[in-house]
Image (cartoon, rainbow, N blue to C red; front, side):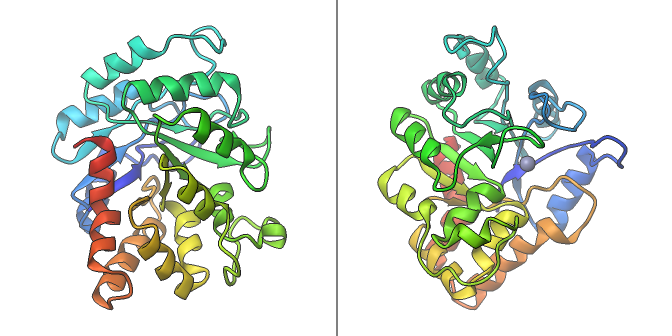
Length: 287
Ligand SMILES: [Zn+2]
């Protein structure tokens, strides 16, 4: 199994989740390799910064277990939509980074600063993993409106860039019936009509979904039958992830159990299982 979404992390005032914790949890869950995402480059987060250099250091100690991503805030380098990020991205690529994220800047997803950065990530061959949020202020994450019009715009404007969607506001869009669902972060109940994630995946080959955290797990289990159908249908665009980043043992492990059980019971095909738990990630990261 390859996990697309993990962290080493200290939130202010809480017990840190360390390198040793991460590797220990990977062993327990039977995860062979994990993408380690920097966090804290954008000022909206409430973490002590764990930067690209930190991720690369962990990778050097555990090259067989850790795949580092790099990250930089879109406002860095002069707060300009013309900033040249490529020298930095190429430098990080040489250090072993295979992708970009977790992008947490609280800016419109189609802000010119972000579009400039996405394009250059595409040029550097780095998929962009982003956290999506619903408004400016109050938390972190790129911002889009219901129906994801901003994301659709950037998918079309940056065809060379692979986008990996994550978090509640992204996964909320698995169901078209989101008017009431949007009142809660973890919408429950049946997917009556397929949502924007599905239509965007059908229209744009550069959109992928990161199934990590409570948001990804909720999206595929809120309507169990639809969840299996979704995984089998979009098997080329989905990525197993846990969001390992804290001490509570149950939350990230649930999705790993879910995939093992669904494979054993035949609810998801062997092909879909292998693609989602490892092969898709290997393909888009070039490993
Ligand atoms: Zn994360």
